[in-house]
Structures are given as C-alpha cells and as structure tokens.
Image (cartoon, rainbow, N blue to C red):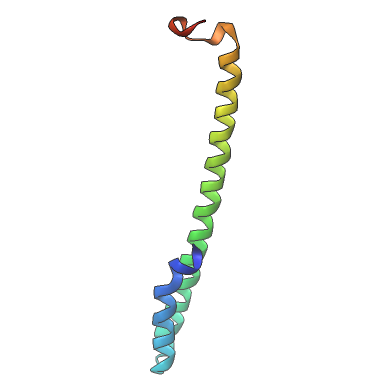
Length: 76
C-alpha cells in the first residue's frame, strides 16, 4: 500500500531531477516519505482495530454462554 501511495510524489521527484530542479525533487521525495509513513501508520491502526474487534467477538461469545448475560427474549 505504501509504495502506491507515494508513487505520484516519486514521479514528481524524478521529473524534478530530470529537469535539474533539485528543490522540487527534494520536496517531492519528502512528500513521498511522508506518504509512506502515513500509509504505515494506517496499516498499523487497521491491525490494532482488527485485534480489538477479535477481542470483542471473544468477549461476546463468552457472554453469550453465560445465562445471566443473555437477552431475556433470546434465552433458550
């Protein structure tokens, strides 16, 4: 994900180098690095959310097995 996120900035960096505009190239490379870092943070956050959801599902499964935590209408 990160590499595709940074691809536009990397293209600008290549164009900057090709035309001798080092300032634009440097800024584009910095933007690419920021984009990759943001993508990595987003992936880490998604992994944390996934683990949290799995934990909630386990908690709900345990609660569903306990008679005193079942919904009164759904008791069997």
